Length: 223
Image (cartoon, rainbow, N blue to C red):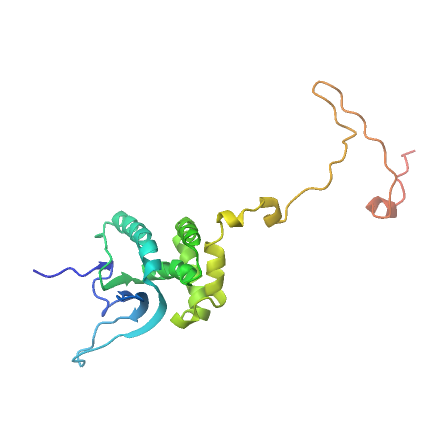
């Protein structure tokens, strides 16, 4: 009987362009995420080894917090497409290309050791609220500039943390202060009329230099 390897819509990482999640063990356990440029071998290749790029290396404790939410999100979409559900393996898990991009957007946001547990929970919530196309765009922008494992916290990686981890109790804010919207001081409306009353006639105002009508002579009555 063939053993089913842990994966999310990526049955053979050697032949598919996808991502590989590798879990390390020990006191200083890490999770490593590799982009794998899998491809079918040619007839002249007795063996082949797809190229890889390490995109992230983060504490295993961080992975243990976010991985259940990733599994739920990916399996929900796989079920909608009529595909088998995936699971995380004890050592390595192959992940299809688009899922891998989304995974990294969340992991990049919480990879630094000074990210508080509260921020990680908020990042998960904000990540879930993004559309998949938005996650893909964020990945593309981040990977283009700071997509290697050693570039944690730099450039777009740092921006992801600021964006996804924002919203904790310490980040309480007034919407008007953030959007820059507000109003001028209230002014009395001379033509205001209570319900049922007749509106007051507005008093004529003198033209000012800022009034376009100031540049033209008044219209003469017809003879």
